[in-house]
Image (cartoon, rainbow, N blue to C red; front, side):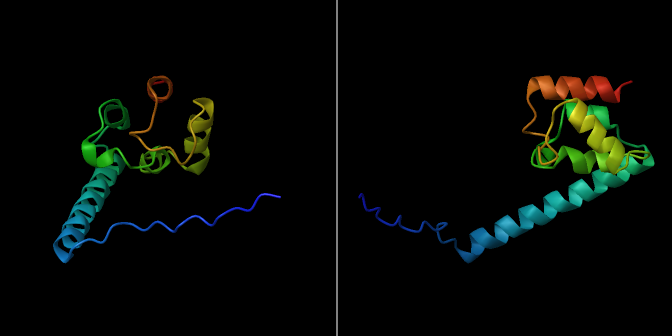
Length: 111
């Protein structure tokens, strides 16, 4: 019978106060920009197809589902149907889309 040795616990490296404050500032900036983009989508000042086709850097870690939900007339059911048709997980980020997924989603949204 083989015995297993316990794995050592790994921890994130300690960060200085300046590093933590910089990370917090950057995270708040990204949240603010995403919130503004969602408002622009709701008002029609931004296009979901343009965003998915060429996403800004601050949007790469945003969930596709959340961005679809910000579009007028796209509720949970329609957003879920779009993602299922393109075989995209609801947890998928915009930056994590493959070329096939991105192209299929754009084709579906442009109909």
